[in-house]
Image 1 (cartoon, helix red, strand yellow):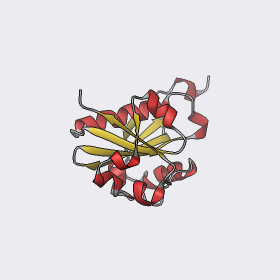
Image 2 (spheres, rainbow, N blue to C red):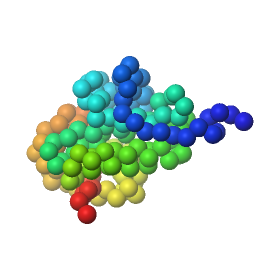
Image 3 (tube, rainbow, N blue to C red):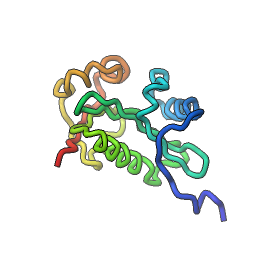
Image 4 (cartoon, rainbow, N blue to C red):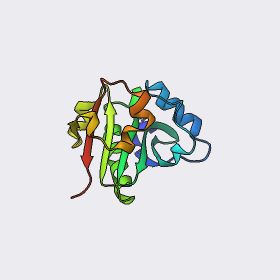
Length: 153
């Protein structure tokens, strides 16, 4: 039996010394990793299987509004529920920080995020602080789908 078959996936924050590995995973999935600073990584979550990092997701907090960014899963681990686990974990973390609404931009995963309860919105409907982020202003093209999810019951 392969050890990977019995190890569970865990999610936690970025540990000291994992910054470069986290950025490498994000960049390896075709997402912008250059703009991910060590400071930003304090609000990233990593999925692990054993000692290996297999996924990442980041949050940028702007008062009650949050930008979800860089949801990335290693290609070999796709289709195993890792993205759902990361999205749910990010949402739980955002709620713990008293966030009210999560926003995101995606070029390829709008169907996935719709399945997680996000709704499409016009990009100009996002709050000004969210629209001013690098993600909105220069990283993602205008063709990227803007989505939001309320965390308030």
